[in-house]
Image (cartoon, rainbow over all chains, first blue to last red; front, side):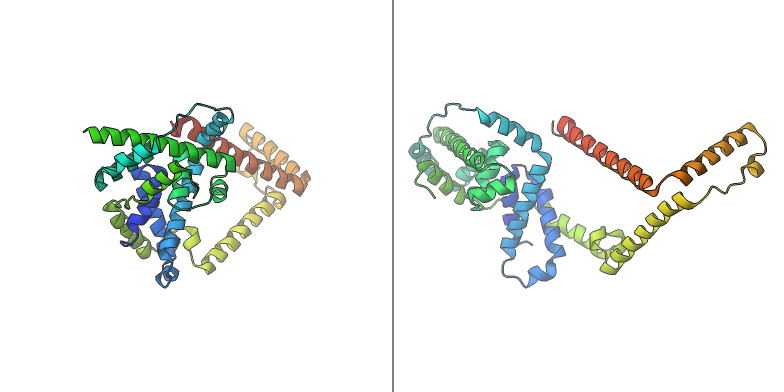
Length: 172
Length: 143
């Protein structure tokens, strides 16, 4: 368990954005693993199994309790055409690269946590779990178009947030 | 991966992140629960972790009791000797009237009606529970 606990916790906390919920869900995942101990003991894919179970448990948890959030997101997106100014990627990239690893990690984790859940979850599934758009849509039970829009908006929000943080950090 | 510079930037930034360290209490919490599960009797654990034979026996016994209860409700006449218990008092008279009413209703009801009423009560109960849970989570818990 010690070998995998950081991976399981990271997978969950990046989806939920909440440490306490992530700890509870990680506990459930390891208890599930305990129930399947005989199979996992001789398996070479224990890490993959744990990551899959952690991801699915977290998605189930989020979708069970946050349907209202999803409903309002769908309604808002139907005619939402807010102007989104482009992100200066080169500047944000250069500013982040200039920071030390610890500071950069803290900034990115913070920016991820601040994203709305509707954007953070598909973004994390796409970039961390390498899940294709279609699979994300199926897992979250939302349309493919909405997945693409949410991920696109999440990237813009994250890029902008990192750019601002990088500028703030470079001034400090 | 597309050629979108923003997508590439975000992908690189996220992939470079090290794993978050799990809270120190996680290991001890999991060990405490697994130890407690391992030492507790099988009948004190959740139903899905019972031995298969015990699960099967439980289902059979529960189904038998339910069948017996429905059969008894439909067939068994009310055999209480109300006159002996309550004499000729007004309470006795009321109970006797109720008993007669119960016997005549149960005796004349088709079995399908009984099942229908049980099913409707169950559906209304589940619907009420569901609406209550949704209302609680929507209006109160998610605030």
